Image (cartoon, each protein chain N blue to C red):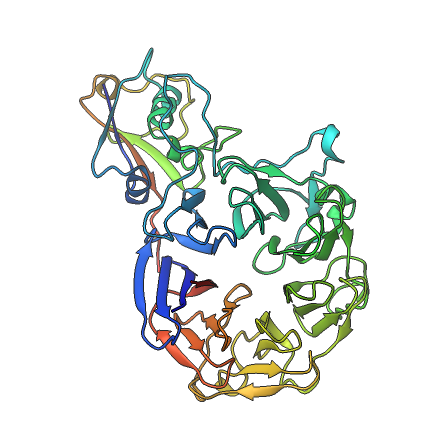
Length: 392
Length: 98
């Protein structure tokens, strides 16, 4: 019987939740890396026991952890003791150094700061890890300050795909309230050279040549809170989702507005429809129905909690515009949690499971595509990210 | 032999449970001790000082013999009591409030 493994990153460690295909009884493992912020954990689609985790701390900086046994044990790749004193290390898994060499692009040194002045790029943390669709040793990292890195040696060493920052609009990128983070990486299963990324607050970008050059894909976005509401860059994109069977169709939860593109991001149109508010962070797509999408509306940018204190997932079966509230099993009074941008995931069992985590420490599951919900855990630290693996 | 006390999270990361004892070649300085520490525990690289600039991370301080050594030059000699192993070099993280 199939199993699911849910990888949960929180403010104070990682948790791994496992269940059989019924998804009604759960085993909870953790906290792993207790006391550290775990921004994201994700497994390789090629080798599900290969997991990568971003472990961070304001005190000690960035750590990358890797597991080869589904999260039972972990290692820091390249962190083995050196064979001889003075020998060069085999790799430094937490060394993220921006590429400013003239050979690989146009070195970029500053971006726009909160006050409009230019500010140097400074690495802070890894927000998102995206393992390759074909090679378990290749993984991409989206970082703050915004850039994308790639490792091809199992996270031992990292190299920036500098063409993104070399695109030329970098001086116009600016941090959102959470920092200037590259938080979304989507690999196109039909075209290994095509990658989508999103940055708060710069917008969405796409490469069609494996990461050497990038173009902004923000046409159609309208952000009334920036000086030029239809600017090429500067939009606060919160998350983007894609169904693997239809890689040209993208769904976006922007700061405000739920958006859709049918041409791989070349243009976008709004599909917020009848949502009670179109502010939010997460967005995801049903595993088997590419027109069924999910969001969790949040009241506003100033009030990061569900409207009316009711935690509601909204589902559209029409690819947007027509939304229904899913409430069964979710708190419908006095609920003031948030659901952060990487904290929703879907499994690929026949009856698609939907998962999300909250800043109140709950992780909810719906084993029937959103009709019914139940908490897997109620009292974890604030949840930063949720991923799920469907295992044989 | 130099003794080094790590903050709890770095002890966990380095898989040690108590004070670390290091052999340091040449004069005992902050730089030589951290070089030896990172060579023996490579997973600590980048957690105490920046990979590239080798600057101390902002929320960490170095103490020994009840002295704050955080702003001492990296190549300055450590106190004799540290160099001889009588006293540990203590790496301390800023206290978290809340």
